[in-house]
Image (spheres, helix red, strand yellow):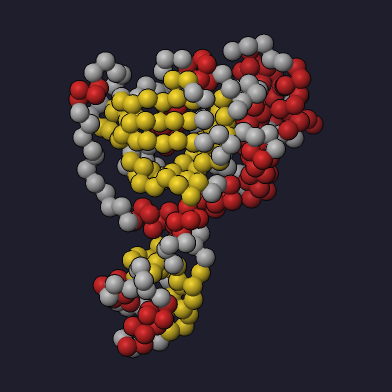
Length: 314
């Protein structure tokens, strides 16, 4: 559904995205993860044709986004950055206005989108009266108006309370499982992404440092929880001894290849640490993300041959 081949973006003298390759198969939900400034929004902007890449090719549904933007994006819906609405107008009027930018809204499609996001009872109220969660659902309804095959969501859970996040998560899963939509989600909410995505792409300083099924990779990274009476020097000692690769958070450690919790227990005992807890635990997406990022130290931006930039937008 989405293909990026050697795609990069340079603003002035700074590389926002270094050459990346990324594929989102039809029917998948892919989570795009990374710190602020990692390049997530720039990649989404390039996929949507808002930003021209400096190098590379982007295709959506088989069409080159730059050469055939209308065809590429004809069946794409998106919530990109902060949704903006006319507060003094009703939710229904807002949807009609935004839809008419590209085509006359189909009444049946409009009503179906409203029902799906559960806004039937308030769609004729001014948007100024909407809660943040209702605005997010209105934005989702807007994204569904073109009858999309691909849905791109930029921080769809941002600012939602637990109930609102739960409802939005269920709507996204229903769109994928029952409507068959391919979905790309950019988010900082690792807990939410964990419940939605088995496949993730992790960005760091404009580079993709992981792309694949995080569950499978997590199985290779045995995680243990370690609690001792006095942990002074414990973390550095375990890492220097080659037993632990890193601590993803206080007390959560990744075992080195071929090492077991019994090896850690033996080292702790030999070094006079009084152990309170030493157990294997399930690797969460947060643990996997932190380990992946910390295993890839900062690097200088990869140089892109200026010849590749000739004739392309900067």
